[in-house]
Length: 513
Image (cartoon, rainbow, N blue to C red; front, top):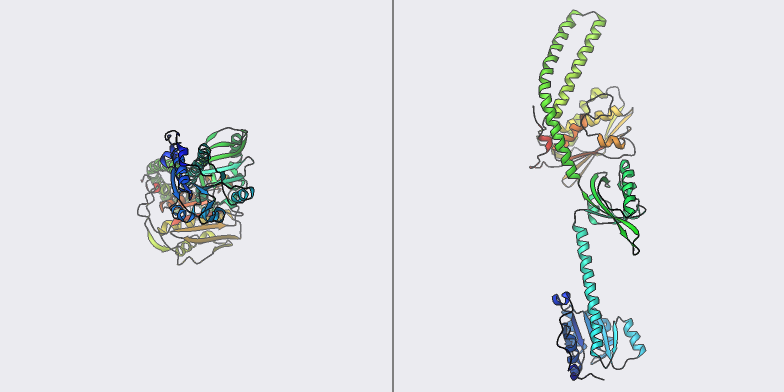
């Protein structure tokens, strides 16, 4: 039975469109019906609700319309000029991938209905078509499509935010295992989802000395507390540490119980480093000013001590005890002179003079400079690869000082036989230098303080050697850090291969004498 066009008489005027979404983008419906009256009748009914309706008299005619895309719903007669719609359903779905399908027929039976539903038909309507019923069905489908579109848009937005935002988004289970994280965490640390998913977050990514404190924060958060402003280091796969400031909350299930912890972290490493450099510059300026006055007075006093000792050496010649005492005074005077010079050089600004040079020549000269220190020791330096052809723009004299200091530290820390290994790796525009030894290494507390001025693990010394190394490396635009090692110490230096024209590091800005 076919519904006559007169069926629409007495229907209300066109109502406002259903929602803001339909105002912005009307729901587009394709009607495939060979009877012109039924086709026009359906079109009038559906346009009352603000839908955009396009019609076709046959399946072949509908294909051209479907190719234009954006069809949200296909309403088709079961019997078409080309045959039964069941034959064409796969092609209908292919041509209108996102569309739901409603089949209208006057000859419905259970088998054909089940077959159509199995082929992906959304609904099966028996003629005569009741306007309110078809409007209700279409409204339900349009609302479903609207919600799906909103969900897809929200999902897209969320994914784009997670991919774009320069912040860590991390989800942990209540047992502290990693559930998931956003791409920025991978970019920052090198960890992949496959490597960390299901693993203990604290064991893999938190330095040992901070684990107890951070676990306490995690437990507090898991008990439905919101925690923020927590700062701790996160370990990258290459051993680097990133200082992260966290804001944490819980994710809850349908009953309101906590099921996971959501942590959002911002990398504040640069900010912390800038604060440290600013503080260091202030301290260097103060040290520099103090040393200007101190070195002037001390130099005169040391010169007087030296002159008096030289004269006295002539008078006590042949007196063994007096000569021994005099030599002790001279050594003390020399040690004091060296101490003053080391502090003065630490406080003075570092000016880098770049030259293209081979790293092989630099570390070879540094090793040769400490020949006297190595005398009588079983000490070997091993280079894992040929660095002769590894050219880099550096201040060779300054970098010799860095290598010399690292080698001397290893000799002081290791018992014979001493084995020092130096490895080089060049990646793109950066060079990585890794110096390891077979000594006792550093504990977490020592690693934290190693580059602090006046901190030393030796029995004697000023504690300025590693601080000076850090200033030299940073003046080149590089970084130096201590990496955890299964045995011995491991110091890693990363530097650009070419000098940057805009390097202006605080190491170069300290007050001069």
